Length: 351
Image (cartoon, helix red, strand yellow):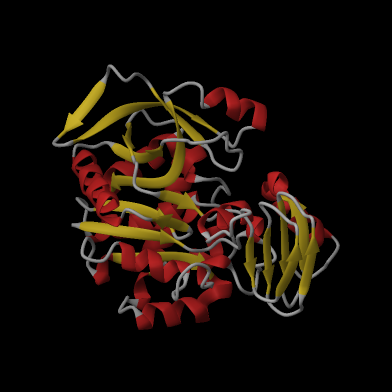
């Protein structure tokens, strides 16, 4: 049986001030009439039964996520409310074990909820093919062909184009190396090597395989996860799980990685720069949302929720005005907004 885990626990700090701890981006209507998590649920409709959709989110968002579950026909018992954020390994590990207890042959797809997929049919075809690989004991990830030296994404390198692993119609390649978010200079070098792809953070695997890999690479964490699910000790033991990504904990170590090249119109709404890429621009490359007035700006993104925002002669800038805060920065530094959020936290500002 096919299952899906939707990751919806992050604050989206690189999306500040549109996204905040009280109103994280997964619940915002940013580019359509529905929230990002609802778009994710809609996107996979038909491929997964509603009772096989699981969601991992922070307990702070329990009311919001219950509303989403109710309106989309999902089961409340399939929601994992994380006591606090600990990256992606902990929720994926706990839910993989929970699903494995129900169905040892389960094929699990892990999806972040802040992605845009413009080619839905292509995307679903990729997931179906990935499920075929997963049934063979492989762990599959989607590799996105890079079109620029991006510093906000991780990268994955395939071993060789000559060592193709074909299953039905879609080519798969053995994964060789994961690269954390690089510097701009490093990213420029990476995209010159055609073996490197953006790591979409989408993973497909058999539940029993994932639990075996966790037992192999993190035996103590495996014991904790088993104890949580067998004795309902989530609050008591959550803090003992490593606060690391699934990439670092498992994917960078396993020898089972298969990469499917995914040309499906994928975009990660992880930053304001990414947001500015999907909205309609005027003839000067500008985007003006809300109460804005401008003279002579180019390639600038302005979002106003309340006050009138006036701009003069800006170039390659981002200006965001919300009820709680104002952000002004060059587009090339949009990935650094996360640092501002961390600074605000240390100074006890609302973020």
